[in-house]
Image 1: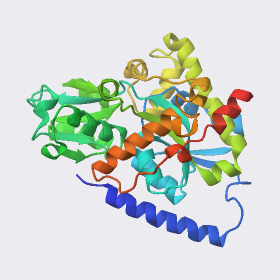
Image 2 (image 1 turned 60 degrees about the vertical axis):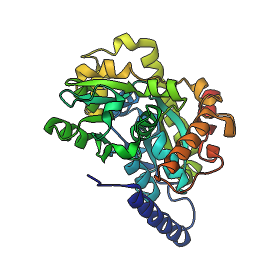
Image 3 (image 1 turned 90 degrees about the horizontal axis):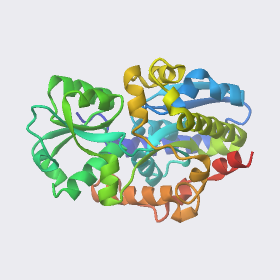
Length: 347
C-alpha cells in the first residue's frame, strides 16, 4: 500500500517551499512573533513527555496557546513543517535527515529518545520466518522514511539479504496493526503501541538497539522546529526544552512510580493511544539523555562532530543508496541546534 512515498514527499515539500517563499515576499516580519500561539505535531511514541503534554505543562510554562496535532508518521510531520501548518514536531532521525536533505528550513533542538530497543522487527507466528534470512520473498510492513524503515534496510543488508528480494510495504502504524491482524504481512518493523500488539503473536527477530550494536548505525527520535519560529520565539523554545527535560528527569529518578494506575502512566497512555498496562515496559525500552548529555558532543553539541549530526549524515547516505533521497548534505550540523539546551542549562 504505497499511500505516501518519497517521490510524493519530495513533490509536496518542493511545493511547500515555493509557497513559503511566496508568503515571505508578501508578508514582512516574523509570522509568529506576537501571536503567542503554536501548533505542535506529535506521534504515538510512548515517552515521558506525553505526561507533560497531557497535564498542560507547556501552556503553564510558556503562557502560549498550544494546539497539539497528532500525525501518523515522521514523514507527515516533516511535510507539515514544510507547509507551515505546524511549528514544532516529533520525527525520527530518518525523516529528519530526509527533510534536511530536501531543504526544509528546520533544526533539531532536542533528542526525544535514543530508540534503543523501542523499535523492533517482529515476525508473525505462522509466517515461517524464524530469522532475518527467512524474510526473502516475505512481506514486511513498515512506515516509509521512518527510523524503522532505515533499520529494516540496514538489518537486511547486514544479514546478507537483498532488500529487493523482500516485499517491503509502506504502512503507517495503524495500517501495520490492521494488516497484521488480517494476516496480510509476515513481519513488521515498528514501535509501541503497535509493537506491543504484534509481540503478542510474534517473535522479535532484532531490535534497533541490536542493529546499532552490530552496525554502528544508531537511530533516535527528536524534536524539530521551524527556524523562523525559533528565531522569533526563543524564550518559548527554551521553556519548552525545560518542560521536556523535567519530564524525562522525573522518569529517570522515579521510574518505579510510573506504574499502572499512576497519573503519569495514565497521561502517557491517553496521549499515545497505548494500553496503560503496556506503558511501563514500553518506557523501559528507551534511553532518555539528560540536558547535559544533550548539550554535549554525544548529541547536539560539537558541530559536525555532534553525535546527532553524524547520525543524520550516515542515515542520509544510506537512504541515498536506496534511492529514497537524491541529495546528501556535506554537513548535517546545519540542521542541529544546541542553543536551546544550552540556554536551559544556564537558567
